[in-house]
Amino acid sequence: MGVTIKGLSGLTAKLNKLDPITRAAMSIGVQKAGLLVEGDAKLITPVDTGALRSSINTGGSSTATSATATVGTNLEYAPYQEFGTSKMSAQPFLQPSLQKNKKNATKIVLTEIRNAYKGL
Image (cartoon, rainbow, N blue to C red; front, side, top):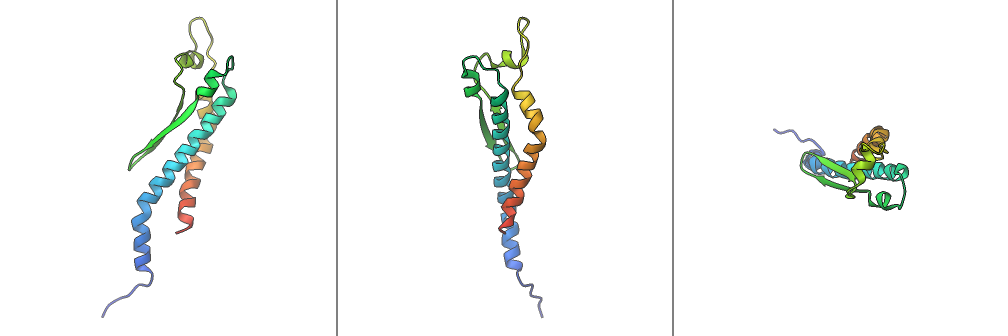
């Protein structure tokens, strides 16, 4: 005598996909959130020649347990703009963009994860 549960093999297959699906969705969501912060930073960046604004970009990486988006610039004078100097007031553009978009960034990541499971 045995017990047969209909759909168990399908459920097992879905559960086995859980981690890779979540990781992929999280990575996509974090990248999209980084792009949101990047876009906002570009809107508020002080402009002289436009070099600073055009140098702002988003990079990312992910592992089995985390995903990271890095928004920044490689221009050597960017930290002086962001934090100021003894001769120049700060004109921050990265930190305010991150602070403004924290809630939206979280929503983007959660939405990507939810959307990833809609088709299962």
